[in-house]
Length: 297
Ligand code: AMP
Image 1: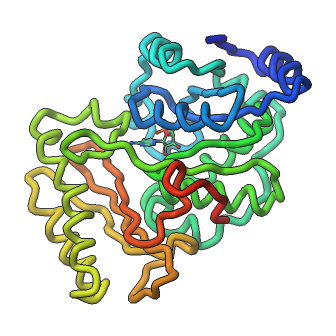
Image 2: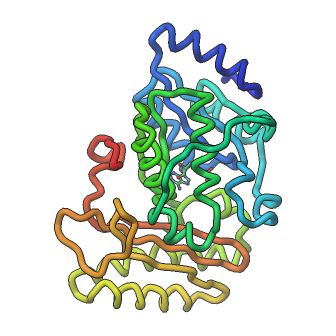
């Protein structure tokens, strides 16, 4: 695997590859890689001749300086994992390389209501930072496709909206959540859970699943209330939100129709670690590799 730290070196290499007609698949990450990240690389490999992964802990999307400081950065281990999975290129830039002095500000896109709910409500400025970095990375890499995880459903939806507003030709492919055997959604932050909290963390996916079984039996606001109470029963756990939303508008649903994309999203504090998870309760056909891939923007 080739490792590039400089924008110009990466671009020179990629330009030559693209001139030969190679399709480029891009997977942006913040590192501390796990099987969930690697599943994105594997999916990218099925649709691209060249897979480019970036590892960049983007300071502009952290609203909590302590979270940024403590974000794990096991770079050597990450390089090994990417090499083993057969990733072709790693882009490992510094902050200065991504945001050079006098560089362009982020794109002019309207996030509107998409960024005011859930993560956007509790992590002020987070999505502005995400849009800024993804836009900048796309400008650097210029891939044909970008692969993102359902794990960050709201992020995926917002990037979809950004691409649509910018009339970008980049295809956004979203891949399902990879989970640990006990159901916990894989996350770089899981390694910071205490052993007790790690054991209890199964409550998050279990609640999403059990709540889905109430669909059709109880009104959605009641299911939401039940889930919030359930999540609070685990010692040391504090739910921040549990929302049942329309997967396009991300606005809360009071009821739904057959054609609606229904997604339950939650954020829960386990001690001082914040876990997010979601489950698509209806119409998950757009996931890749489920039934093909498509842009839902
Ligand atoms: P991150 O390094 O947390 O910024 O994540 C990089 C990409 O990996 C994002 O598109 C995430 O949605 C995706 N991702 C994170 N966790 C998982 C998971 N458990 N399964 C699948 N994709 C994931």
